[in-house]
Image (cartoon, rainbow, N blue to C red; front, side, top):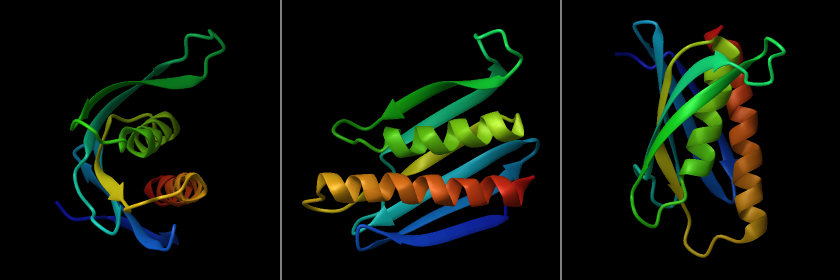
Length: 125
């Protein structure tokens, strides 16, 4: 497997990197960053018709977290966004860690993840 897409940016004074590759028709994504990148969770997502009945696409996710890790928030966002937009199964794993991170820095990381994910979707189309 070769990473087809790799996006990096700074968030909360640290590096944030999201890489993606096709595994057959499916997509594998790795999110890492902060002072100690790690594997804090795994999110597996499948696209499906939205329950709203309006014909839009939604996603169903299964999540495995290591105890005490909050990485699900960003990894789930990435997996579900890519799955909905590209109508493919997605697995996203990874983690972002910064000691003493503030609420504002957490928001900054979340905004950076949103920006990077948009770029990943465009490049994978």
